[in-house]
Amino acid sequence: AQTVTQSQPEMSVQEAETVTLSCTYDTSENNYYLFWYKQPPSRQMILVIRQEAYKQQNATENRFSVNFQKAAKSFSLKISDSQLGDTAMYFCAFMRPSGATNKLIFGTGTLLAVQP
Amino acid sequence: GAGVSQSPSNKVTEKGKDVELRCDPISGHTALYWYRQSLGQGLEFLIYFQGNSAPDKSGLPSDRFSAERTGGSVSTLTIQRTQQEDSAVYLCASSSTGVTDTQYFGPGTRLTVL
Image (cartoon, rainbow over all chains, first blue to last red; front, side, top):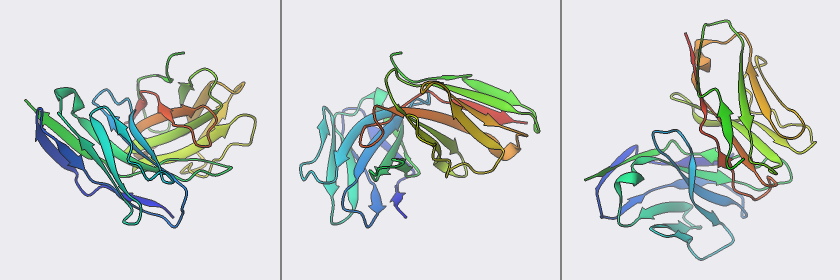
């Protein structure tokens, strides 16, 4: 069974600085997808970034980028130029695509606080 | 609609009562998921619908939980004889085809069982 581990329950960063959130996963699959979702106090889960395992290039979305290390089964999220609006719970998630259910397996989350 | 919508936003009920939670997916999305977010269990998958196929109910925690999807669109999650451990946020997500497409989430329903 696949598992996702986020070892940092809480993190804090000053506005405009850079922060990295860690995520490791365990799987025997070769083809899979990894995601970072953000959940602000409004509860809405918002997709931040997505990475296909077959792609060697790290995904980037504006201030958000990942460091995907397939051999090490590591998928960290880097947030550059942190903004107050980045304050939220961040979840790392794994998905194994199949012909049936493509459910997401989530980590326990990292609560990020951006300080002014 | 523009996004996934869920109702009610919050629901408070008494132990032993039945509740119904509603999810309206993004128009045109064929895949629909229910997840539960609780303090003790984190985020866990409950059930999956894809088009007209039989749903994957493997994540439902007990036979008190059931869900249906009418006309391939709106879904209702029903919890019978609610227990205090059912208190959680219930999240619905939809995706275009369900295979490799990104899941988009609704705002969730916070259920509190007294």
